[in-house]
Amino acid sequence: AQSVTQPDIHITVSEGASLELRCNYSYGATPYLFWYVQSPGQGLQLLLKYFSGDTLVQGIKGFEAEFKRSQSSFNLRKPSVHWSDAAEYFCAVGVGWGKLQFGAGTQVVVTP
Amino acid sequence: DVKVTQSSRYLVKRTGEKVFLECVQDMDHENMFWYRQDPGLGLRLIYFSYDVKMKEKGDIPEGYSVSREKKERFSLILESASTNQTSMYLCASSFGSRGGGASNQPQHFGDGTRLSIL
Image 1 (tube, rainbow over the protein chains, first blue to last red):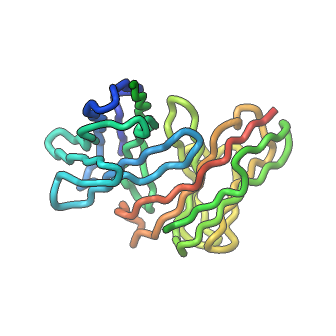
Image 2: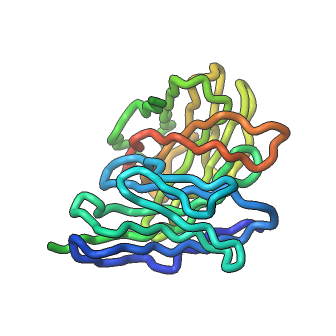
Image 3: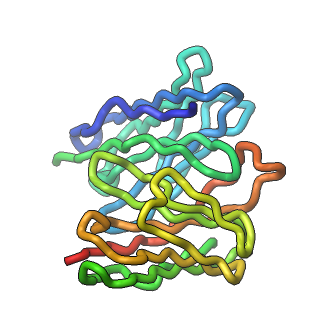
């Protein structure tokens, strides 16, 4: 069965520091992978997606993610975090019938 | 831009009531989804629909039903609300995938309805 694991429930990072959020997936075929962000009280917004090709994917808000097939990982990174990046981040893999399997999420807190 | 609109941001109901949550999308998407979101559990799929009048159970359909009479509208119904259905409910939509295989189409989400059952 497909699954998505986000090992870090909560991460605290200083403003201006780099951020990396981990995501591991279990899926039989070539996966379609997504990262979403959810600001407090809001719905989910798509940050980026990976389908094929270049394994380094650029997204909105200065985020990027790297697909590593050998490690079954799709980690999200940002070189320099802003206070507005405080939010919850979800990794997801596309499964049948347009459904997405989501990870449990990582809460990011940004300190001054 | 895709717009997914959920009818209420906050809703308070009493146990035993029949509750309707409405969702409308404006991008002619074939697929629509209802999730509930609870702390530490991420998003869990309740029901989804890949066409008008079609519906499929997700991971946690018990206590819920859905209706899709028009392509743009997908309703979630709590037949007899209970306190354990207090949660954030999120609606999403996406383009369809051919043949039911895994899709590369992202889902677009509404802002959510925070439902409290007293």
